[in-house]
Structure formats: C-alpha cells, structure tokens
Image (cartoon, rainbow, N blue to C red; front, top):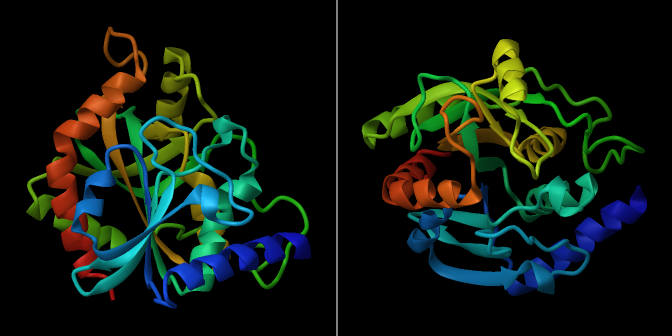
Length: 275
C-alpha cells in the first residue's frame, strides 16, 4: 500500500510544480454535459493526464483527459476535465487516485458530476438530479485491499456520503437558475453496455432514480479521505425501457450540448456559495 501512496505523492509533486503552489480548496470531476464551466476559469493552467507521473489516461469520447486549475470567481478550483471509468480497463485504485491527489493539493470539497439515464419516470432529459445517496451495483469497492492510514480510516462511514448542506445549496441554486431539478438516488452499473429494461425495472424497485457508469468509486474515496462531497447528474436520456427507442452515446452528447449554458450558470453560482 505504501507503493500506492508513493504514486499519489509523486503525481502531486509534479502538479504542484506546474501550479506554482496554488492551493485549490474545491475540486470538480466533470462528466459528460458539464464541461461548459471550464469557460469560466480565469488564469487557468492546463495539464494533460498523460504528462502526470503514475496517472491513468481517459479514453472515453467527450472526456478531454486534463487537469485545469484556476479561479472561478474568487475560488481557486482544480478540475478533472474528463474522468476515468472501470469499463476502460482502469483499476479502481487508478480511478480514485486523482481524489487522493486533490486532497494532498488542499481540496476540502469535491463536486462530482455525471451524465445519467433517468429511471424515475417523472424526470425528463435535460433535468438535473442532485444526488442524495447512491447504490453501488458494481460489486467492487476501491478500498478493497490493504489500507494506508495516511489516506484514510479502514472503515469510512458512508451514512452521509453526500453533504446535506451542499445538497440543499445545490438544489436551491438549480431552482434559481430555472433548471428542472430533483433530488434522488444514483445507482452505478459497470457498463459500457447500457442497462437492459429488466435491469432498469430492478433498479427502480430498489429505489434508484438514475443510473450511470461512474461516480461511486470517487465518492467512496473522497469520504475515505475526509473530503466533503456534492454530487449531481445530468439526465441525458431516459433509461432503457422507459421510452420505446434505443439508447446511444450520441443522444447523451446531444442533450448535454442543449443544457450546457444553464448548467454552466448553475455551477458558477454554486461554487460561489462554498466556504
């Protein structure tokens, strides 16, 4: 496990040199549909994942695979422009390594975003869901294996994985921005195939409101590391079986493009309210 910690510190050392020792307090992980906030970053520094020692590289279409550090308003932020997914073949340890890197850089609050399929039939494509809890349906956990106390406790509490104050603030902000918004439960499947209609019916019976292929490992790691979390999903499509039409990644990107302006305004306002 000490080898993993050494990987984290090696990557952090490289980033600190590139960032002129700026100390971001807020971290963002941008999923599909959330990249427009990058246009609000001032005095930004961009570092491709491929340049960072020990770090895996994103291969999913629409995920640039780069760190961006700068200011949004008066808040210093560091952004993952594109995340890592299990279906790309990355290990869970590699997928969550950027979370520990952000903690070492000074991040206290992590905003995780994603594109998701709407399971709840009252949702519509383009709506936002503020995540209040999640279901890990992958059967895997990034903390499996030896624990390093320098990263976090052996048995982290997940009863409040998503910070209640941040959740309330995000909901209020989305309503102010005129976005169709809900609070709900996110379930992660492994992907990369979309879920079957039978699986969606099962997830609905379990209480899930939206489904996607990311986010849960990063949230587990963030809570392990003592970082507060806010999570939100863009409903880029209705889940399998809700409508009589096939699913495609093109639909995900099309919906994301349609809502990008409203989502950018939301994120800028939300970040301004974080202490």
